[in-house]
Length: 100
Image (tube, rainbow, N blue to C red; front, side):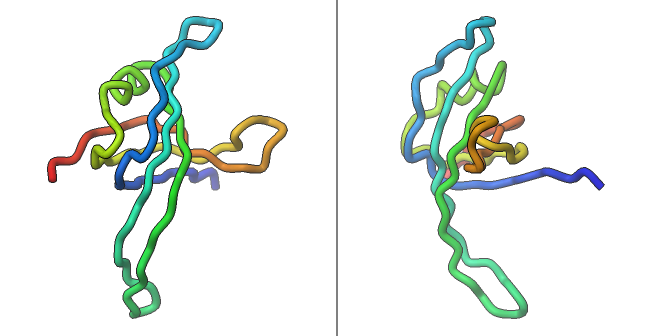
């Protein structure tokens, strides 16, 4: 089975300026903070986490218009930061700003 899917909402706490790969592909890096109360084994649990992520292509262009402090919802998959690292980052395939 090959499932690797993530959906997360939160606040953009950092978003770097849009840049381009040597091949000319748009890319943006960001950090998202998520806070919620979720049910686990019948108990409410306070959930807080910070996730680093990146978006490529059209999604990167769209995310580059978002600003620090925006509430956003993202979908994507997890992968290593680079081939030499065990650190995970979220590769975003869909992103939208949430209305507060």
